[in-house]
Amino acid sequence: MNKLNQFNEQIGRYRWTICALVFFATTINYLDRNVLGLLKQTLSDHGVFGADKAGQELNYSTVVICFQVAYAIGMLAAGRLIDRVGTRSGYAYSLIGWSFAAIGHAFGHTTVTFGFWRAALGFCEAGNFPAANKTMAEWFPKKERAFATGLYNSGANVGAIMAPLAVPYIADAWGWEWAFIITGAIGLIWIAFWYAMYASPAAKLQSGHLQQAEYDYIHSDQDEQAAEKADTAVKRISGARLLTFRQSWAFIIGKFLTDPIWWFYLFWLPAFLTGENARKVASYMAAHAGYTGDKADIPGVISWPFAVALVYTVATGGSILGGWLPKRFINGGMDPSKARKLAMFLYALLPLSVLLASRLGAINTWFAVATIAVACSAHQAWSANIFTTASDMFPKKAVASVTGLGGMAGAVGGILIARVAGLVLQHFQAIGKIELGYGILFVVCGTAYLIAWIIMHLLAPKFTMIQLKSP
Image 1 (cartoon, rainbow, N blue to C red):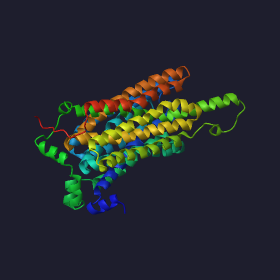
Image 2 (cartoon, rainbow, N blue to C red):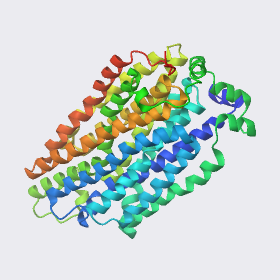
Image 3 (cartoon, rainbow, N blue to C red):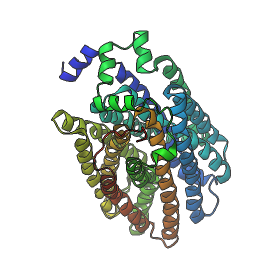
Image 4 (cartoon, rainbow, N blue to C red):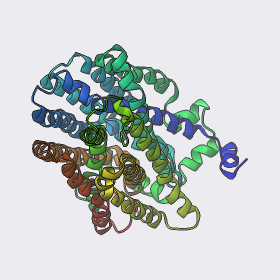
């Protein structure tokens, strides 16, 4: 038995059960939102985004933006709601809402109706990360928080892996409508487990599900406990008050610059890989005019659903490593703030690999897949830590609100990148050089994290707990 298992046996491990619940919720969250990108071509063929090929790119980006606008508004509302009604109810309301919104896509057959259901999904899905981040702050001490966040955040990758392995086949077998219905219904099962198993640590201690030793360990951060006691008179913190702290802006700007990159991969990676396949086929057919075999057998053509699943499989490892590395630094005696910042700097360097995606893709599509896998893995490692900076710097009563502010900023950034991507790709599609458009967008994706790290360092040289009590 290793040291971690021995430790958990001594004090209890119920906090990891809570982490597992949040992991599955995050998996469902990303399973539902990934369906659109995977069925982009199918929906286009059915006329959902209009008949004009060039216009379809812009209409698709409009549907994506509907999600992002609603997600931004929902993030702001969800953070405040969850801090007010509590994690248990807030999380449940959010998941019920997004499950029904996901199912609703099956009844949308135009850009307008799809935009409506996409907005409903975005508004309700916004509750996941404020609730999840607040749960981690309530159930884990700082030394384990990034690792636990990395574990639950890996659910985003698992959802992204499951989607390409299931959704295209459901759509082929029963029609694209059933892909939305089946994936949307899964979330309703989670609700029963959440209500049966979740409560605050204090409530679980009282009911006997949590040992006193584990409760004490969860509340072992002295600076955090001191800040909580100092702020006992502050029952509710306004958004305006939170915006007066430089630490809030460090988190907000960090999310604004890096969240959109994940959105871009999520919604455009299948289209990019499909385009790479199409170019390989066109090039081969031009050189072998009499070829009548299966296009899948043409050199360089890959199974894009498998490639997407592979990218997110690699990213799952990044999410877990992202939480493990600062924990290792802290256990080695490094200051928690320095450990978090050093880990984030290392993760900010890795996405630069995607600058080579288009050029390598021209040689072999799998080379492009490899660079994107590295970039997505780095994003998830970064994400596990930037979420944790909110609970490092703010008391638990404000964590969901701060997360909501950052999430809103990330969604606004997602809106911008969706529109820019739509315009850039529409232009280069029209002149027959869409791969150049993707190359430009990959430059943005590769450099965003390093810029974000520098700005966050300038605004918050140390990720230490603030006190909300007025001076």
